[in-house]
Length: 214
Image (cartoon, rainbow, N blue to C red; front, top):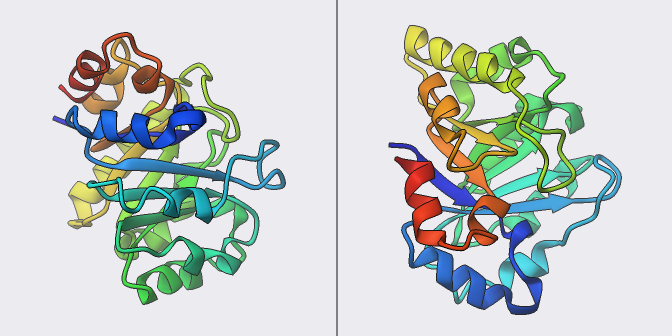
């Protein structure tokens, strides 16, 4: 069974606290915090203040995904007691090893994400030190996109590397995943699935969460 991290990007921001409280009561494992800066990706979402506003409501950990340029400038802003993972993009980092070290220095688990067009081999040198690899199955920047099959081979690649070398990272996948296609990424080796609109916009959120996980 995979774990699930609904992205609050798809929640109703007019009642964000209520939406978060609702989904966390239905068996989710993490809250996925999608941060976009309008530079690394064309869209702008929100900053750390919105995330921190949920600190008293959230009873499950944060899975923070920084889709921002020069993420080293902002890591500390997303460090809270609720934060478990902080993930940055390989394509946005000038010093990937240093970024991993910085995140670990704040006592948090470090993740690196790659875009659909980035080959999985670029992370080979960093695999021993990573806690999470986030494979994007859509182009980062917008919610509601269609799942891209190219992500399957990348998930398999990281699953094989982990098995061969005894690495400890978890494999996360993000983009276009719903109850109908979640089995594809789970069979490939994904441990954690990000789902936004498939959860928050579902008529039956409990069913959607259960179906994606199982």
